[in-house]
Length: 244
Image (cartoon, rainbow, N blue to C red; front, side, top):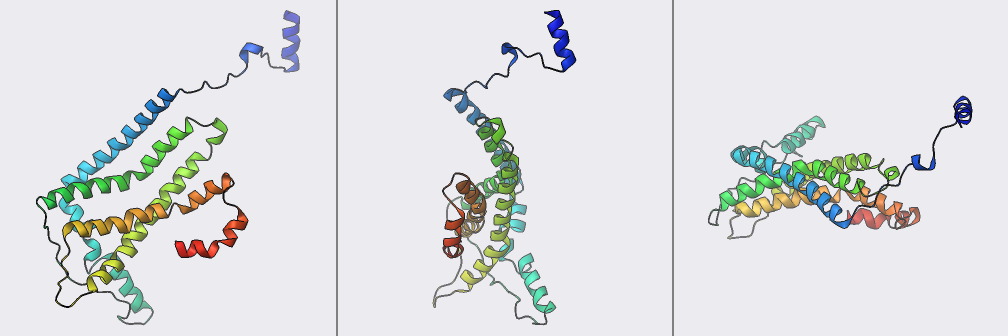
């Protein structure tokens, strides 16, 4: 027996017996999955709540420099549009001057309620990359190890696309929409939006755009599972562009 072991070592053969082989990963029970999901959800909610509380403490700064900024004449989008207009020799043709309007609170305690809503929505927007990462960690614990390699790339792609969508909505869609909607008037009616309606429109301009920008990732997964092929993407290319 000793001679066989010595000869195996000389030949470079690994001494692995039946008991030394890699064991398959044990199956996770449904209760363990629920407990794992609960842990990741609590972590995500904890971060969202912490950031939301910080922004609620500084809610005056948040409203002045972030929420109401797209309605002000010195917003970065308006300044860049005017600078570009002068750069190409068009004078003030592309310059945008948003209409001046006041926001009013018509509900009891509306400023307080809106401060809480805006603070925690801002916390959610900032925490989205972490939330995606926690979700990816939960999924990674349920799939084979060889399929986990692409998770980091997917998390990075989702986070960057979401940030790009929110930035597109905030810096481009929101100021242009506010300028057009507030400039549209009806005889005998004064445009004085309520605080809640203004904030609801700001949410519509930003959060859905972050989700819409996830379409490349969705198309990637549909292609991986065979529901979306190269031929169908080429055939319905125009419909997709119009839909987006």
